Length: 237
Ligand SMILES: [Zn+2]
Image (tube, rainbow, N blue to C red):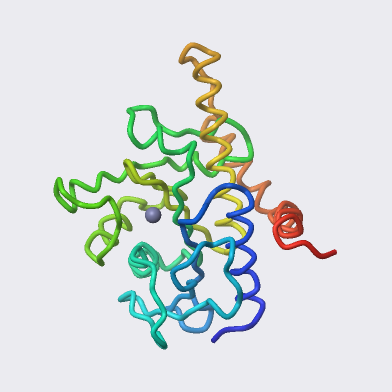
């Protein structure tokens, strides 16, 4: 297993995403193994808000557990394995059913950056249609490597991909960045829906330059909300 600090960050990520309302009983977050890039770390199948260090397991990029010991695995672990396989720059992945995001996956309204905190959405937010890869009769879950590979292709160089009628997947170069993005994707969706209502459908979004510059600025302060959210989720001083 990798250094305890990464396990600690991954446990905190589970608790934070739960505390912030991005995940509930469902959803999961993983990290690529820093020394073994063809492996990743993910909890056993359980509610993220209850995850402890003992629940973190190691997987290969086929989605197989290295030391399963009879533990139940997340059905959707192929989201993680296939994204790590296709995108070497990605080191953390969040799958959630983030409620405010759902409407943007089922309508023609694109999710766009409404303010500086969600400027990473400026890279575009594609929508994954599971019927294209899995036909008309799936249970909507990414439950095999083929569906995971199709999703990994859809996200491309974006930070977020929406899954129609399911939720969204957020990636990052670090666990902290992925958590930051997952939280602000949910906030952006809520604010964008409100602005669309208030503005009768007319909303001014960040332009590409604003989005790029604001993203750079945010990169330098990722630890500020992380420390706050961690304290709120885990307690302590
Ligand atoms: Zn899911």
